[in-house]
Image (cartoon, rainbow, N blue to C red):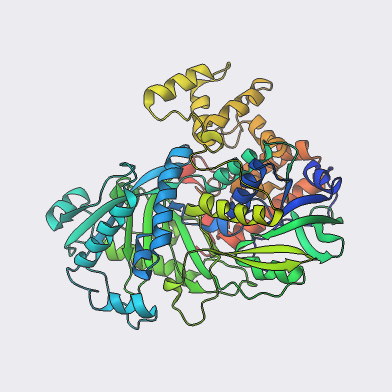
Length: 588
């Protein structure tokens, strides 16, 4: 068993899947991309834009693996400077600034503050870490070292003034801005990075861009690469159990931390990967939310791990750990990790009380890092590389590494490699090319009001505003769908309409109930899941996907299992509002 998110029951009867049928009925392609995380999806989009006949397959749902376990950060990686990864930092800040422009509907500037408790600490140990990556007892980075790092970071980050320069404050001014910080601090340093508010929806936007190019681009989720023969790569539909072969001129393995496992299943031995486990918790704590004042706290724990605490969707995200992990075992956030997070909060915000009853969601994943032998997890390179191989007699490109921030640049490099194998030249650049609902996204209050007024189509302005937040300017497509149907709010969650749920199945490849609960919406992330909501969602999806009553019940049961086992969530009968949700952490 690989460490993938648990999926609903396989092999059950289902309505014909048109996405799979488009691939099965024409089982050839110039490029087959295996893996529907953000890097595989972005490569699919880039290849499609070049006019390549490309197929994308994903064994689970799109964005359900490592891409779903991120810290929701789009960042330049200031700490990578200490690792000497200057190329990666330069590329990361350029891509961060680029995503703020081409995906402004989901990628937002994030003010980040580092609390600092010493002046000179780390000056002597930092060079040793830089050279060996195997230092013994970690040393806290003091103000001088952080100042040097942020000054260098600014030199990479300016890009025409996309983000402000960093600033330092002494103790008195720091506490005036954030009075709940530990009063033993000496300074704070504040700089800007970015966060991605809806990573799974951003991935879907990139996918839709690729599919919109034309018939040369085909994709299906719950379709796995299960082997290789002389006829090509064997694909298995995980919904129906059907198998068929697809012949491709080039195969791209972008399955993230499962790259070696995927290669092994196709008969190619590789030992490229050595990912580490990272966990997060999501808290509903109004006091902590107020104390953060809209900014991220980013600091180093005394064990050398980097820690972040920041507000997101009215909740607080706390992460992350960096532990050795077995890719073949499920990655779950343990109680020890929860204790670790609570200790971190108490270190910098000692007056804030947190407990397990405030956890509305937890998650964990394996980073797609390279094999690293005895290098400490925190010093394993976050850069990426592409490795050549051969499978079923055709070129195989295996992606090692990659992160959310650099997905556009990475996919450009991977696409260029595939084009070279095909003897083709790039014809379209993705630099500066708007992504999905980021195109013409209104970024001032006046522009937003104008957009809403122009797209009401008989809908309530408040609903249009919510749709614009949720989908960017792609909300216009959703509004057109809603205009043909009764815009009836869900009884169990009036933030959504019945027509939207059908839209997820018809236009966004939702196959299972869990796809909607975790990735088409953020209802699980913010702690809004109730049994009434699951029943209502399963009825609406079932009507669209042709589920029998027994299948609807099985979908609910499967979803409850995933939420409990993978996310520590127990679902109760009813929640009066998201903030008072009866969705609680398991083991409370």
